[in-house]
Length: 142
Figure 1 (cartoon, helix red, strand yellow):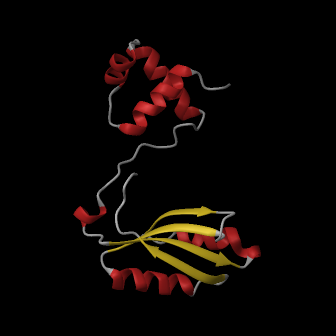
Figure 2 (cartoon, helix red, strand yellow):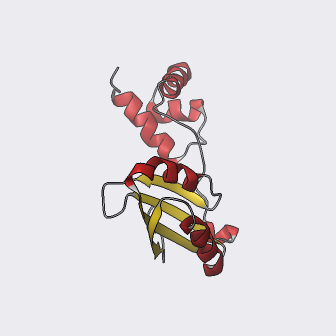
């Protein structure tokens, strides 16, 4: 079943602030709370809404070195390497890619040395052929 305009509005609002209550959503959308509650629950059941989370300011919690890292791996080990990367606490995001690198990841470190240690550990994973880190200077949009 395709998403309608109300579903898309609900998603848009929750992407900006997932902490809103059903009554707050209903008020913003001019709908009954029960309608919004049912819609959100249906979106969750269908897997459209996967989870609710927060976005933190990495600097304010002590992570001063953030890198977006491209990985080249043995093609036959692509998914296995991606899964191993996802197991690292410092790795906040992992995706397979068709771009310049086969896997892209965001890795956090408290300082450059921590980031280097994490990359060194990752480099020892069987199947990793090349690591291409880019240190982020400033996030403009999340």
